[in-house]
Image 1: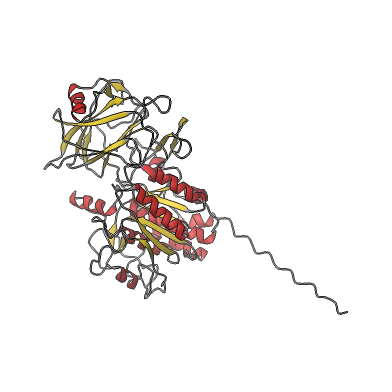
Image 2 (image 1 turned 60 degrees about the vertical axis):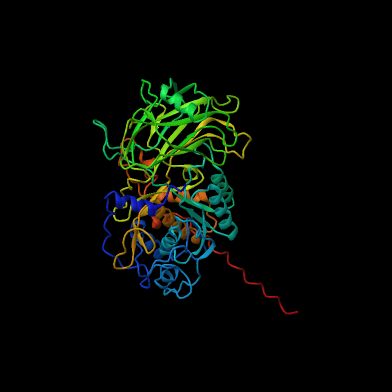
Length: 538
């Protein structure tokens, strides 16, 4: 399931009574032929970069992966309207940008398609209007579909690719198949950006004495055994598993606790993974959810791609649920090919949390990590979000790192080897802006027809567009060149929470397009062709 959908995020914000930040007074559009101004220009200093260095992305192909491009047709915001309003390139574009978006695969058959991909392409076009644009849809419930989209764009000749899709079947304790696909293409010169995700949550009603701090995402670097409550052992057996030998100790401190308490919105989903080499699983761990001390009827869906774990779907209810989560060990992983006490990860997907029993990281327990799969892989340039009106203040929902790999990539050996030292990588890499205007999704349109687009799904394509400007200056730039340029020229931004370091919330800070392009080495001067020596007359 996709876990980085900004349209869904906008609905969550609205239904929760949290109004998106008011749109600042409209500034002149980067090109007067546009109906909606390029809100990201000023905070990212992209307009200054284009003018100072005389670049607009010409010669660079930018590919976008998201849900759909032309599935919706709301009056005034069709694809044809976007072209006529200067928001997308195509025949009749009033800015003279007539090279249309190439759609390799659209997501019109997916019921939840919202044309978020078209909104992302509008944002790329605003920052890099000369870039050629191409789109490939990905099924939000399939990591394989994301990999196919990457291959389609790479085969087309994309120079820069950005995606906003995150799926829970992506392994998080080793490089996933999706990230391996990205690594293969970045080795060939492709640049790849991903949204960090919108999964960070702070409590709406913290328990007495607790700070308001990130509480979604619970991880331990090693399974710690404790006795299972009888009700948990019985629930495991009734689900068709053998009796558990023990349960996970979830208390970060010195005492033992086999149940992890939360207040959560109804019909929430919970991702659960344990650390074993994907495709070579020998152990078995079973999550159990209790309500009022009794097992709750939860749908337990095994993850795909050989990833060890489940997605848990809680039942619908009229009110929030006070629940306890236990993890029972049914079979210990084979010590010869895995960690007998593997890491464990739990995270709610796009859910409101009233409170959490434990809120502080301690010892082997880390609370607050919400970056997943390929979006948090070291190979990807992962992008956090801040409102364009207050661009140095990260969005509360923007997902946090770090990512930790305990195993080598699954293609490096079979089964994947246990790393001598776990690889811990700070994520996200960089921060861009969101709540920028486009015509497709988000809040009600203003007088320009613009709708605010909240979420890291908006921030990531803007970062990719800045990279396209740099790539148009120096086509030889690699993924690591661009990562280094972005991070060394960014404006550092603080973390709002003492419990999470800035490097795992805002990365290196806010993108500065002008500083990035200024840091590029000057292009070598052409070697003059010597004049031919005249041949003397005989």
